[in-house]
Length: 407
Ligand SMILES: C[S@@+](CC[C@H](N)C(=O)[O-])C[C@H]1O[C@@H](n2cnc3c(N)ncnc32)[C@H](O)[C@@H]1O
Image 1 (cartoon, protein in one colour):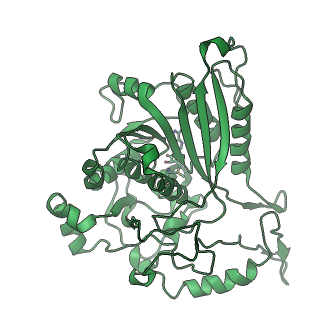
Image 2 (cartoon, helix red, strand yellow; image 1 turned 60 degrees about the vertical axis):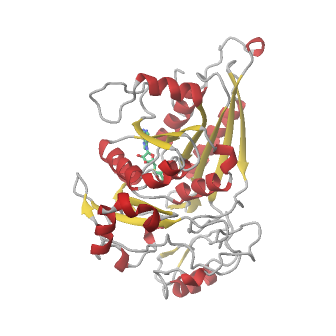
Image 3 (spheres, rainbow, N blue to C red; image 1 turned 120 degrees about the horizontal axis):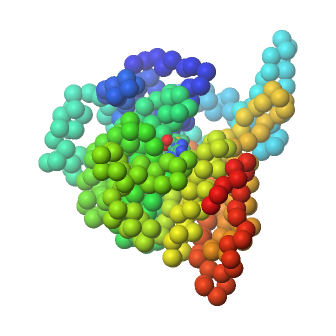
């Protein structure tokens, strides 16, 4: 498949965007007729990882890897180097060319190495949709450790309509995965809930360290793809004793489905286990629509205010800038709404929990290859139940955004 057709509501993740056409070979059609691709993300070993605290100590032997977009980068860089100059955040002014067309400056890019190395932005695609790969997939049980050590294989689609964005891999998933891999001691043996997990990549990486990961999202088709990815990578998680359970959790619904007849529903035991033991909730790139962001924060609040223990929430977000004709300027509406929800949470006095909010520095090591642009952020919220004697009657009810949420 060489051509991807773009409709007005089509979105394509940067993670998949920079691959040359030769890598866009589909493996199959999914249940709703969308082409499915497989990408292999190499997890760099301790010796290979990018140390973002020490830009000089970059990926050693980077040249050994296949760079699928060799030759393209120089062009991109030439353009961006010039156009991006002096265009820091808030300094991106549109202007008109000689014919009166809008000429919009691209956002500036930051290399993880601090220099001009834009060669590290693609996941490493080792083999794709060829007979050898098919055979490897079939022999997965026997040869898996040998073939795929340190490689996570993810099925995904490309260029989806907005309602199917979960079928692509987003940079926020890779940022969160890097954070997890850089702090194994923090997550070892824990129970984790992922919200809006999409293809499941971050949950799978988490399960190489944690004990149980409830990997949740909505839509049978997406959850089936996610479950397939969990199975494709089971050698990585089983090896360390971790388990990923793919379950349905909709931020716009109040209850978890426990109906046996419904696929991806929860058992009563799982619900109890999740409430009793979850100490981390993770979510990658889930704030791109204000109503959904409201639903996400309401879900977080409902879950954590029923926990009897502290819970740490980690949310990655990419601050996407859009130019609007209405304002004739660049704005980050979804990001602004996310920050608004965070500050409401921080200020909330509900008599049940205390909330602390903090942005984490993004200089932790990079185990996956992607462009860690400065617009990629990681936020931490710690939700702690108040001791009984400090708890006030829950007279103040939290209203998030435009939703008068009855919490
Ligand atoms: C941009 S994708 C991110 C997917 C994945 N975390 C990643 O970073 O690759 C946003 C995710 O939020 C999920 N989502 C959207 N609305 C939701 C809802 N009401 N309840 C649960 N998940 C939802 C989507 O299905 C999608 O998987």
